[in-house]
Image (cartoon, rainbow over all chains, first blue to last red):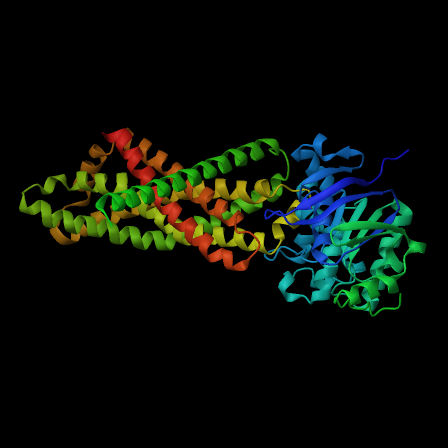
Length: 252
Length: 268
């Protein structure tokens, strides 16, 4: 039996001033599964995703990727794991002094020792699929927000990752592009068994992305199966607490 | 306030300053060790990409500085000869002009001025670039490609800047001596060949070794210190100017310190 893509046990993250953003977070994401983290404040989800992406270390608790825990992993293995993770969070950016071509093919050029042209050939298909081909020689600053976001997704997809960590996946994307992206991810999930961990503060995301939901509530988390979770109750509880949760304008 | 209290304050301030500087020097040395380990760990990975970054760094630090170095070197060479002639004529020792050129330019001013130019031109650029990359999340993006940012960003710059500084110091010395020769010939009609043969007699192996050691130390110091401060920028764009300023000051102080240390070790 395949080991879970990622599993966490009693994760806790506290800042230097002792303020703990979350405690006792446990979950497991199997192959082909989709999990949603609903969080207010959004920072909880951002930090948790960075821990899942091996970029941050939790204050307490254990986390494993592909069956191997952080304690058993050295720096080299963590770099290897990162290649198997597609990570797009709200601050994810392209490298500003590289063209879109170089940004997307960076990982391939580095790890597979390909010459530039070979690497470019490998990503031409993806560039065309993401409608970025004609912008391939431009730097990120010359692109729209939506195109930049798409380029980030394209960069992560060419790695052929098995685990996707996405923070508010519809950010900066129009409806057509978002639907297209959902189709691409759906294909990944069905054909390659990729798992998705999606963080958002918009409860309707669950309808599109979730097999299970984890709701952060004042630093603690509660698990729901998708059928048990009612977005309107979450929205109401947020409203009572004085938080306005924006509505995803697309039809759930 | 009693005089003892003032003394206490001053010694306390000096002590804290020294400890702070030593701590930072320790951190920079630690950074160097981590860079070396990273270079060894990934020595067979990403060589094409690294080579490209390395060539770009050599071009930016070395080739693009040539014009500026050339102007400064010519002027400094001329200046040393003008002052040398003015002072040495008074004591009737104009024949030690070549010796003065060797001592002032090859041993001290050449390496130091080249280092200052590289600090101002390339060091600041490296610190700003690393700072921006850190603040904008580009470093994280590189990490998420399974690439060690130290390997991809730091190693080619470290090697590139060091080699560029070594080459620039040699270039500075040659151009500066040429400038000195031209000034000497134009001002007091000392023939080229006479000054050249004096110079060839004055420059010995130790000068070349000292020049090389200084060049190596300055190159490593500039690249390491600037990258170290750039990577420590944190997450606010307002942190970049103070970090760059710290990088410049640290580079300058360390280069002067190494210059004095190496000169003392070899010439005293």
